[in-house]
Image (tube, rainbow, N blue to C red; front, side, top):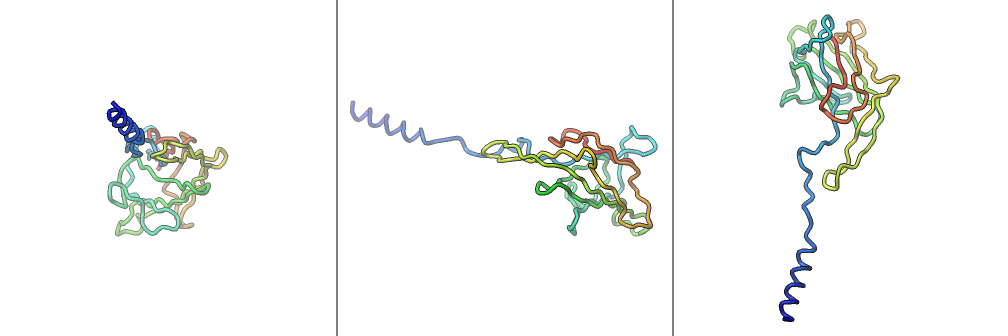
Length: 173
């Protein structure tokens, strides 16, 4: 009887130290990216594909990868914002890589925001959510002063960037 009790006690202590593995599920929402939709300036309700758009962060040499490529020709993109600081600047180059330099056009957009860290779980850690500045959410400029901006209008649709399920910014061109 004493041996059975000691055996049960041994197993109780052995299994009591086991705990669930700390693995962050791939489906757990983490720090969201800024979702930008591109629209036709003349017909604002219609999504419009950009042609060979290259998006490069300030101080970077390579562009953001879209499905393994530095350019995209879609109508929606998702780009990361810096979690340290209160602004992120990107250059948006339309027709990147075109052999005719007259068709290549670059605009600069600086996004201004505040950040808030939220605890997700022990396995996943923290995520950052962003709130675009209500008075000055972005600054839009042209890379070349003599050139005209290819982006005609920018609309903030959602100031709170908490997930990637919705369009935060609409760009009309």
